[in-house]
Structure formats: structure tokens, C-alpha cells
Image (tube, rainbow, N blue to C red; front, side, top):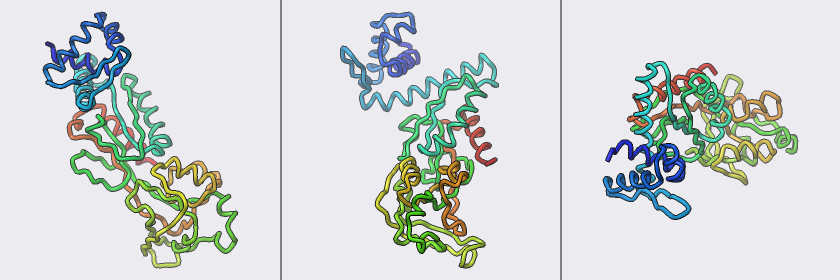
Length: 306
């Protein structure tokens, strides 16, 4: 058995969802494709696929093996393509992960310009506000916002973001006049604050006095806020603020357009929130990938210019 070819066939069967589609690609028979996968399963001593008359599904072992096999197949294809074309041209799949809001508002434009620059590259963009295990999910590079916890990853500092207090004009107008002006973080007491649960601080919002604050510059305050909505989705935070439901403690980029138009107001501008680092992280085994290095450089340059 040609194990590498069997791995390639297995990966394509999973991606295509059928033996017949891969048989057509290989100008072979469905039986021949099935035999390649069966031979690979025997060599590994594990069942990778469950087969029915109508569908295929990965087993638990198959799911783990698929991500690693796909990465290896891609790396070999990348190396072979580099030899054929010369080192200047990148190609193949690149799997990228980010949070939903950052991915939609900030990363997508950079993905577009990267693909325009490298037309042979294909990007699998996975957006989630929850934690993603890069190795388990087969991710090549991920954007992580906040302090890093996993020291096993290769990390590059790509920029800095800030959180700020924001509220829609409708929310502020509906308040009694005495409560419409916030001067110190403690003035958040009694306001409906929308809590994002995917950060460690959750209800405890930190601030640092700036030059215009009625406290010594650098004075730190952390206030505990309350509200009738909490969520693990940055997109829900955005929708709730734009609906006038309450006050959000959000990254600046989540409301760039609405802040510029005046639809959304920045509150307590003299009390900026603490800076938050943005890192690009990759599993250690991807540190030599030309695609990963090129994409990380592309994103980092754009974020640092901002």
C-alpha cells in the first residue's frame, strides 16, 4: 500500500463526502477508492469512517486523524508546488481562526487582500467566540485577543486593542437627565450593562484615569456592573448596544462606523480601559510554514498601521 496516496484519498473522501466523487477525480472506480481507505484503516488499526448506503461519517478516531492527515497532505503538496514553481509562489489551504466580531469586521478585509496577493492560496476561516484547540481543530494560525495562556504555541504580537464604554443615543436619551452624564466609573451603578462572558473579568470592568479625569492620572478603578443580559457572543453585544438595550464594554473596532457617525456614543472618555494585546498564534509544528509566516506578516502589518 502507498500510505501517502491512501492518506490523500482518505482526506479527499472526507472533503468530498463520497467515494464516488473521489473515484471520478482519480479516474478510478468506487471500489478501488474504498479499498485504499480500508487498507489505511487496517494499517492504522482503527476504523476511520462509518459507511452506510447513503452517507459517510468520521468516527472519533477518524476526526482526530483527519485533521493531522489533511495538514500533512497539504504540507507535502505545498513543498512539491514550491519546487515546481519556485519559492516565490504560495499555494494550498490555510486554516485561520478568530473571534466572530473581529473576524467579520477586521480580519475579512485582510483575508481578501491576502488572497488577491496569493491567488493559489485557499483560506478556511473559522469564527467562534469560544476557545478553539488549534491542534485538535487543525488550525494553522489564530488571532487571540487578550493575554496568552497556552505557552506551547508560537506567538507573534500583532497589535493592541482597547475596550471602551459605549451606548446608543436612544439608551442615553431615555434616561433621566441626572443619569445621562457619567463622570467616574462608579456612575455605572444602576445602569443596564451588557456583560460579555468570554473574558475573565466579566462583570468587573477596569479603568485607568486619563488627563481629563477628576482623579490623579493613572489611578485605577474596577467597578462591578449589573444588567439583564449577558452573552458569549460579541455579535450579540453589538446588536444589543445598537438596539439601545444598555451599555457595552467593547473593543473599539466593534463600533468604528457607528462611533464615527455619532449613532453610538463613547462614555467616560477620560477613563480609558486597559490596553489588550492582539497575538497571532500557531502550533509549533507550523512554525516553518511559508503560508503561515506570510499571512501573519500581512495581518500584523495592517494592524500595526492602524
